[in-house]
Length: 256
Ligand SMILES: [Zn+2]
Image 1: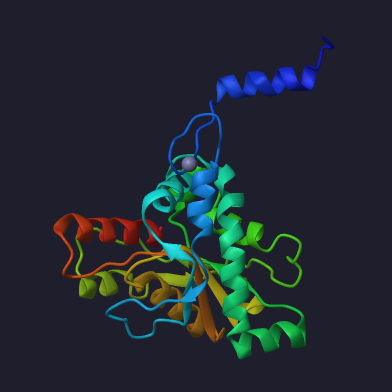
Image 2: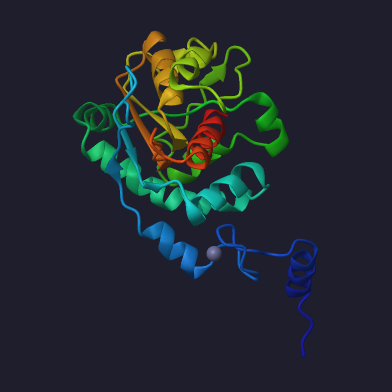
């Protein structure tokens, strides 16, 4: 049998970092066929939280934040699974296309100027350091692969101050916790002023994060703001305490 150094190296790397599906944990694959089907079963749609907070931008999403999708997003964001960026970018591409098709201002800008910025929701700096990258910014770049000149990722938003963990806060305190917390970083505003833009986040729950990001973008002279996310959490006040806690946790994750 011929010696194939490349294959041997790959085998050794696999031994060092065993593969498991990011959605269900099945061994031997990083994203299994069942989870692929589950993710593909969603479809781009307009989404509004209930209750809808004032200033919530028009938002499009792909699927519900639960089961395999939730496991994959958590693994991607906090479990070192940067390889899932490419998996999650596939449905987000569909969401972006559907959102633009339904938004004359944004589509007109893209056709007229040949350029429409994508703005990732900000990451807490500690989170970005731990992950080695700003995951949502990486997701934006992967989503627009091949079209980056026309759909540039402008990583413009920063947290201006520390925010309390959203977990355990009611809707009103959640809003006040984030109010004024996001700003457009110096030097980025000139790439956004006077331009419609697309705000991107992985998960939307109560909408508090998207509202605050849209406020910061509008205050800096950008807009109108359209938002796209991969998934949405359906959080109802009539849910069980566990379901409500899950909603809060996912919002906290989404705010990061
Ligand atoms: Zn799987």
